[in-house]
Image 1 (cartoon, helix red, strand yellow):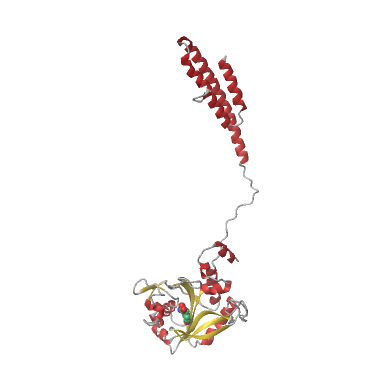
Image 2 (image 1 turned 120 degrees about the horizontal axis):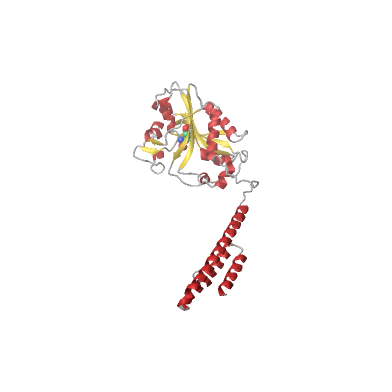
Length: 338
Ligand code: DAH
C-alpha cells in the first residue's frame, strides 16, 4: 500500500505546482537522487532475496507512472508559461519611437562656411594649400627673412630643416600667384599650427586668407570689402577701423578692428572698454612678394588679409575659451543648431 500512497502524494503535490520550477522541485522530491521513490529502491537490499523481484517491479511501475505524470504536467505548464511570456512581450506599436540624436555643424565649420559664402558673393574663389609646407612658401617668399622671430623653433613645428606644419595660410598666396596670372581674387581657408597654448590660443587653429591682385587695387578697396564683411558677419551697424601695423609680406600693413557688437561701440568687458575688437591682419601686398611670384609690382597691386576662424567664432558666439571648440562636449555643440 505504501507505493499507492506515495503515488497519490506525489500526484497531488505535482498538480498543485503552479509553475515549472515548483514542479521540478516536486519531481526531485520523489524521483531525484535522494527522492522518496529512489529511497524505496535503495531500501530493496534490506529485503529477503525472494521478495526483491516483486518489490522491484512495483517500485519501477510506480516510478514510470510518476515520470509520465510529471512529463505531462511539465508540458502543460511550459506551454502556459510560453503563452504568458508571448502575451507579455507584445510590441506596442503606439509607443513613441526613440529619436536619433541630430548632429549639427561645428561652430568653426559654420563660420568658415559663412565666410566662404560671404566672400564668394564678392567674387572670391576658394584655393586650399597644403598643411605641410616648406619654409620657402611659409616664410621666405613671404618676405620673412631667416632671422625673423616668426621662424622661431618655439612657435613653429618643424618636421625637418626644410618642412614644417604651416604657421599661416598666407603660404597659399604664393602658391596661387605662381599658378595664376592676375586678376586674382582668392580665399584660402585651412588649418595652421603653432606651438602656442592658452585660453585664447590653440596649437592648431583655422585661418581664412584672402588675396586680391589686379591693376589699380588700393587700400580703399580693402577697407570697403572689410566693411561689407563686418556687416554681414557681425551686425548691420558694425564698423571697421584700420590701425597701422607690421607684417613682412604687406606694406603698408594694418590691423583691423570691428566695432564691438556686444556694446555697440560704447565700451564693455568684451572689448575691454575700447569699443573695438581686433579681428584680422591685412595690408597691401609687399612689392617683394609680388616680385617673388613674377608679378610686376609696377603694373599690379593687391591687398591681402588673414583672420583666425576660431577668433571670429569666439566673438560671434561670445565664447570665453578657445578650448570649447576642440573639447567635443555635445552640450556645447548642440547649441549651434539652426
Ligand atoms: N599671416 C598673418 C598671421 O598669421 C595674418 C595676416 C596678416 C595675413 C596680414 C595676411 C595679411 O594676408 O596681409 O598672423
